[in-house]
Amino acid sequence: MERRTVGATALAVGAVGLGCMPMNWAYSASRQRGEESVRAVHRALDLGASLLDTADMYGPFTNELLLGRVLSRRRSDAFVSTKVGLLVGDQHIVANGRPGYVRRACDASLRRLQTDVIDLYQLHRADPEIPVEETWGAMAELVRAGKVRALGLCAVGARSARRPGARLHDATIRQLERVQQVFPVSAVQAELSVWSPEALRTLLPWCVTRGVGFLAAMPLGNGFLTGTLTPGQGFEPEDLRARHPRFTAEMMAANQPIVAGLRRIAARHGDEVTPAQVALAWVLAQGRHVVPVPGTKQERWVTQNAGAAQLRLTAEDLAEVCALPAAQGSWE
Image (cartoon, rainbow, N blue to C red):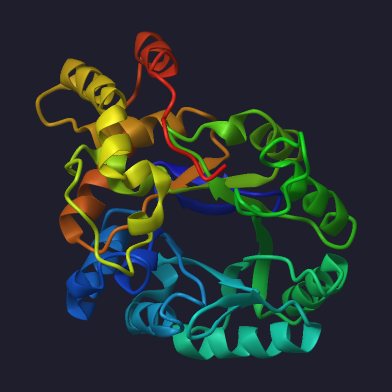
């Protein structure tokens, strides 16, 4: 697989990564099977999809434990990205950016992942009670201690920290400007997909001008852009899509023209090319500093996603994607 670099430290990863969250968190609990997920991680590494993206809150903790089973045997094949800063309770999630907590959380993640070093340690969310510079400073200490190689920041959520009239990523850019004064940011993770292209306006250009890598979260639109979901199919109660405005039966039906457009482009490239691969190829085409991180827990989808790294969209294809209708349904 083509290799891409993350940040000024030039950490090399496969062009397509693997989002591990669905293996233990947020999607279809009845279909979460540990052994199947372990096989999916091995398949990703076999194909060169080396970036494994997790977080201590996924599970919580069980996702890191699952990856540790693979990393204990294949650490040299993997680029490990995990996150800190969110605590999961019975009915809520809260931020914790206290320096002492960050240090303890890193040590716990290292134990669960069965590794001596985390390649990319990301701040999941800033704690509103703690200056973000203090949290970032504690994370920088972990780099100097050799426990972490590079630091990253996850974008503020679409429903968080929005001022009247502000653009989607203004709050994230304000945080980035602050922490960059403390220690270099190597990567930013934010949603970017055919149906959620907002990062192209301000956040991605910010990263480009500063040599910061960009991890594209949810590049397949939480599965919608694969074309495998049926409007009105329903989701399990704990599945995040059960509460997402774009996954009501009405909105899924209204957004079918987006999938139809991806199918048309795929057909021009061959019978084996899928809408999902076109969606990922579009993300890859946004720049060599961009690494899509599609989430899955099945080997077959890992294989399909990795294949997108070989797909080269033409100027006509890219123009057709740009002309697709905007997605309906929003958190706003």
